[in-house]
Image (cartoon, rainbow, N blue to C red; front, side, top):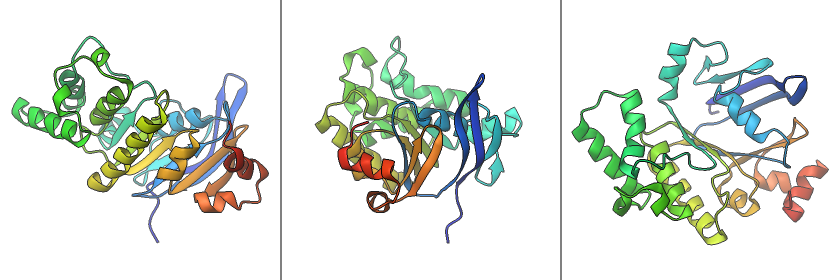
Length: 246
């Protein structure tokens, strides 16, 4: 049996006095796409932020690659970050610089590679996301779908073992969203990645998910495959897949 690449144990998250997540325990396995879903305000993004240590849990811990990142020293965590890629909901590209410079950022922050190698790597990553002609364009010169692909190229710049995506299809039309899903799955195969994706898009969930984590009111109600979710005895989960309207 495969060893979990991410282990979440008894995780509780609070903002001031409000409990956002309560006693979450779940394993995420390598080379799978795990989708975190549920109604608005259920804690999806909060769970992602706790996994990435952007927020410290009030209780419990997160273990990645067998190491407890919750108590890890800052220097150790900086080294761990090189194994992650993050695709933010809005892409988080810097509008004042071109796409080449945007994708240079991870190399400059986390490596000492010579410029020639960085240049070659950037071009390879843009080819992987079908954006080789956008090298010297600014983000404002790209369509919404192209900006997402450029942000994806930056997220995979250092060949991460785990790619985290927060609402990757947000703001995209159905055709562009489908193309992005296909690209994400293609990159997963080519780069042998594990993916953790927050989304509420039912069509995307059907296309990409190996496993889902269903949250509601801060609690995990279900963890399993889409097929298992559809026949689940948890009413909220069945209802989500019946109407897809959260």
